[in-house]
Each structure stands twice: as C-alpha cells, then as structure tokens.
Length: 54
Image 1 (cartoon, rainbow, N blue to C red):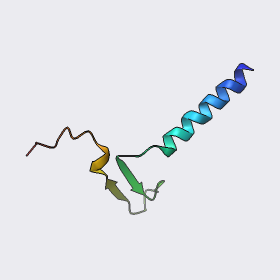
Image 2 (image 1 turned 45 degrees about the vertical axis):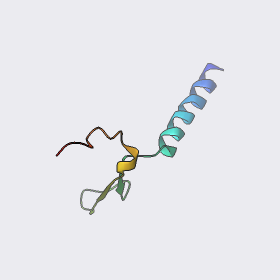
Image 3 (image 1 turned 60 degrees about the horizontal axis):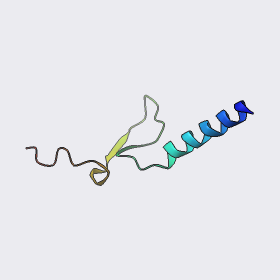
Image 4 (image 1 turned 120 degrees about the horizontal axis):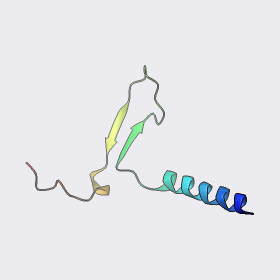
C-alpha cells in the first residue's frame, strides 16, 4: 500500500512540474549537442526583482 501511495505522489509531482508555467523555455525541449536551440524568457512569469536595474 505504501508503495502505491509513493508511486501516485511521485506521478503527481512529475505531472505538476510539466503543467506549471515556466519562466524560461527551450525549443526543442530535449536538444542534442548538434541542434540549434531557441531559448524564450517570459518576463511576465518572473517576480520583477530586476525591474528597476539599469
């Protein structure tokens, strides 16, 4: 029974990390060393801690 609960909790934790909004994302998600990568920064998801910095 404990093993089932642990497996369910692990699955929920894994699913929540995929469903949450990300501040930085990459395309492709799993790039190879030879693939070009595009990184996207979504500033609306951040805390605004650097808003007044020059």
